[in-house]
Image (tube, rainbow, N blue to C red; front, top):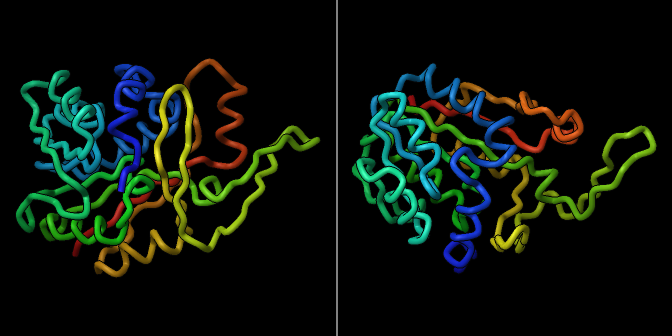
Length: 234
């Protein structure tokens, strides 16, 4: 099923630049990188690596990183920017790797793009060695279920939601990008990992840090846009 990434590849690459958008640079990169460094993996798999930004950081830390990406346009850009890296075309639901091949599997804002999320989690667990970890950054389900964001008289945000407990997809457009994402309740994500016998070792709802825009930081911090979690394979 088309999710728009192939057609949106050029616009996405232009939008992200070399360092990524605000949410990556100032919200998620800090806690994601800290968990990677704490785990000290020898070999890591970035599932849905896009243009390869996080893979390049992993390799810069001396980690043998492999990027997996289904959209050819994004895969080509990852290879162009990092010709010495290892980038493979493939889908999260059918990983082309042996059992126990990795110490770390990463879903960096990619579970929302994957139709068969449970199959992708099962595959990530399969390719991990015992003691390996899955690291996830994802949009908060109350954001993906939102139908409107309004200002409150207190200065905060009012989030209108609908169908939170259902699972459904929808198309989203901004700055020339048009992609299909999934809403799933938190229980669906947690259940997918628990079904694989994985053990939760970290959970965060990270605040925005850095940048010079207090207004922008406040918008992210009034109600967290993202969650981050880490799961251990016993």
